[in-house]
Image (cartoon, rainbow, N blue to C red; front, side, top):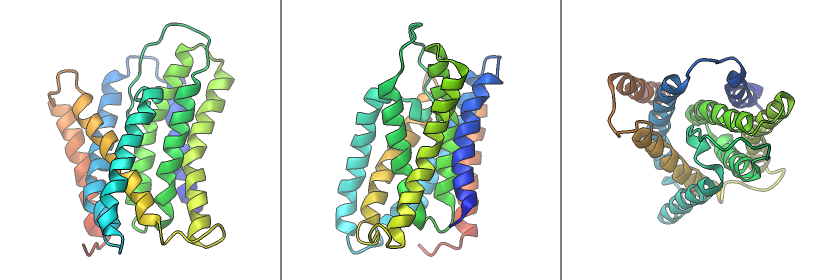
Length: 241
């Protein structure tokens, strides 16, 4: 068991959420750049690494179905999460209500993303998930703050979200070592669902993070850096696809 992976998953989301208490100025432009980087990185590792791996098994003819399921599942989850998975911050009416739908869908989303990590041999996936949870946690904290939750409740909910991907990873480890059951027979199907989720999130980030759907120079640089980092990881990992 590699503890650093749990630490990276938890701390990226947790610190991303805590940043809401430290950043007082307008953070929309910085958030868009982080989103552009994470979106392009997610998209690149999905098409270069995750999709070829998912189609490498004997059940390759079924993978497309599970990619569609994952894509549609993300569409469904966003009816409740309001797009926080890709950093959308919506200004709500000032109420003191608890956003149950947002929390439940966001936690389920993070748990599912952690599931395939037991087979993440080259670590591209874990960094992709950790990166995109930073703006998601920041957006979640912003919504919680708008709903006038106390600081302690905001920190508790950020912690709850931050632990879900490591929990999914822990469950996948149990599946892979046989203590819960064999993961080999259906790992690629789980990966197909995650690919569908990633395709939806990454393309939404890339096409919607600009109001006019145009990419300015700073966003283009962030996108190219994200793809470049994914390419470096791809070739440094010695992929044989």
